[in-house]
Amino acid sequence: ELKVEQNPLFLSMQEGKNYTIYCNYSTTSDRLYWYRQDPGKSLESLFVLLSNGAVKQEGRLMASLDTKARLSTLHITAAVHDLSATYFCAPYGGRADGLTFGKGTHLIIQP
Amino acid sequence: DADVTQTPRNRITKTGKRIMLECSQTKGHDRMYWYRQDPGLGLRLIYYSFDVKDINKGEISDGYSVSRQAQAKFSLSLESAIPNQTALYFCATSGSSNQPQHFGDGTRLSIL
Image (cartoon, rainbow over all chains, first blue to last red; front, side, top):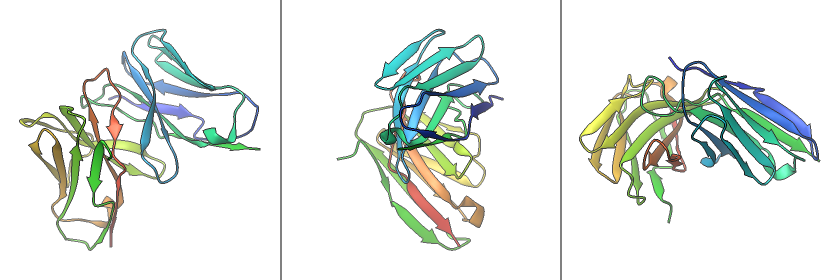
C-alpha cells in the first residue's frame, strides 16, 4: 500500500524567508504531482514530475523528484504572503490507478 | 464556464437519505475520479472511471456507488447517508496518468 508523508503539516514563516516542504512515499512511483489549495477552494495543479531527477520551477516555487529515495521536495524562495495555502503532494499509484495524496502542508506566510 | 462542474455546491440532508452528487466536464477527458476531503486527512479516492464501461473502486468505496452516464458525466451516490460521510467531495478529470488531474469546485455535504 502506498503511503505518503508530508513534512511539516503546518508551517508559519515570515516573508522573505526560504523553506522546503518534504514528501516521502513508501513504494515505488515514477511520477508525482504537487497541488495547491486555498481555503474553501478547489485544488490547482502546480507541478508534474515525471521522472527521477525532474526539477520544475515556477516563480518562487521549485519542485524536485528523487524516485530512488522516494522523496519529493517543494522549495519556497523568498516567500510572499500570496503563497499562503495548503500544499499537497500526490505520487501516482497505490491500490487504485490514481493519485495517493499526502495530508497536506498548511503554509502561512506572515508579513 | 468551468471545465469541471459539480452540482450541488452545498447540501444538507438527514441520515438515511439517498443523495446523488453530479459531475460534468467539458475537457473531453476519458478519466474521471471522485474524492472526499476531510480536515487533516488529505484527499481519499472513492471511485474512478477510465471510460463509460470501466469503473473501479478506490480506497474508500464502501457506502458509495457511481454511474458513468457518458464520457462527460460521472455521478456519485450515497445510498443511505450516514453522518461520517459528511465531507467535501471533489470530482476530477484527466487525459492520462502523465497529466495532472483537474478538479471541480467541490460539493460540501453535511449529513445530520
